[in-house]
Length: 549
Image (cartoon, helix red, strand yellow):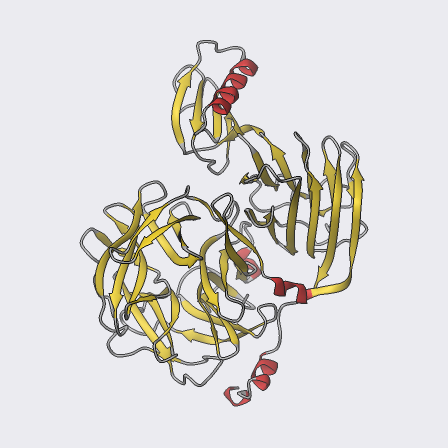
């Protein structure tokens, strides 16, 4: 994170000559969105980072309104090539490239924009030229490079494919995939193989949620065909994510932009952070993408940590841990029972009135909560008075229908409803929204993060969703990272993720475990975490490039 001002999308992650690079959207002049540059940070180990000078400036007519998001491809001769979106003062978006001034510089501290920019000047027919952006890393097939770009195509979100042999001349191939379900514009697309399958991810605007799906890719027609359900990449505040392939350990690593959710950003002088790096894989049994923290984060642990094994949690008797902090890594595993609610509280005040809870729940029900979207069938009630019985019918109907993942009971009097109560059955689990006319529920197991009493500022909604489970599962594990106002949760080996912002008092440092009906904590490990930031001078000395200072 820069020391001040505004940051958003991660851009162009790449490994080059011994360094990991992460670029990002950056406003160097104010802690609000605008005047987009490419900020730049480097690392030797993905755990310790240093901010470098700005890499790209919006200094050309085609990008004077912003050097927007993009990616880096290592070209045929081994030179990194930035491909990014430039926006002119008229709002028109074009695709541009930049190359290093000195490819021998492992820190990639200086970039130039060739005179042949923009390399893609106009979008294809049906594409809004003000919604045509965010180039992916290119992939190569039979000597031809292909790149995907996010777009609004005929009023719906789409990912488009272009082809080139030289990163100067591009031809339009066609839509990789398009779908009307999520937003009218898909930003920051990402497309990559994991084994013999492909993952397509897009950032849905105006939802500001990241979705991904698994499928197949036809290398002749350049069309993507989903073979699994499209699901949220993260149930929390996580957007505009970007991956790269790490050649050092042969893995795919992802970052995401984590925006603020309080009201103090401009006065604080900085806004937004990047998520911790995550390793992407596919769970072949469940046919879902997974994401877990990179193992290098263990380098930030301050030892000794705190460990316990086989701790019995009594019903409704929280266990307060002796370790406290606002920068912690927590790994905990609970024995799984047939019906239970259990989890942990973090950033807890001494009096127990302020905390954020992270918990597992089976077939949860939420009062005063709507799940807008995903409806496939509604039915109405003749009985308007027996609400408890009506809710039970809604839940039981959803449980019987195989396609039903969630339900919402809408009380009489809802301004958007008819005069009688209704039940809405859903084939997905949408995000939650407060609505006093609604009671909602989810079929199956969920992981949740409750911020209702997390502090004096920020969003108070509950975040969470389905936690995919296997019949062989005998426990539920959480891997949690806390860094002041950010909490990142990885449940069940990365099958579900929640990234959240909370703003409690600096004195709220407690951690406790809880269970509604009692369970065993088979393992618990907690570490205080050190800083991930190193000095610019140290980076330059190690690279023998101190002269750039």
